[in-house]
Length: 155
Image 1 (cartoon, one colour):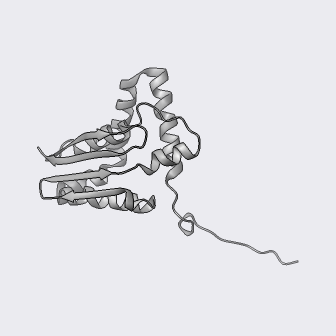
Image 2: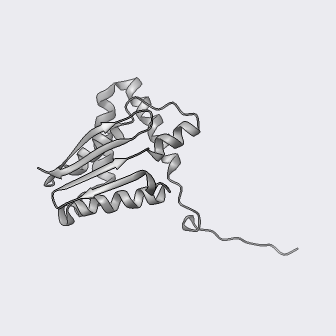
């Protein structure tokens, strides 16, 4: 019998980002319980500064269009573009999230959502704005659905 070999690369598979949210939620909750709320924020600042360095550079170069493009790509990968809306001007980007696909996924998988999960939005986006001409505000957040109103604007 001839041996058959199947070659696959990760890029051959459909992108699934959803389990990332479960892992981050578990990490946030571990840090919160073991070291307190501020440890979560400090971790997320370190994570965002490293992971989102290319986005921060794009924000410095292109302004808020880079943030809008980033979130459009993320929500497209999450297959949830219908759950987000954008209002963009040169100095202001308003993002309205009807329901968060991460929260939705975690609820479906039975995971208890950390009371600090919202920091994934707040602290991460604040950190992306550090040393740029912009700042971030989390204007509204519903912990049950992840619905939010988020604002990036010129300082």
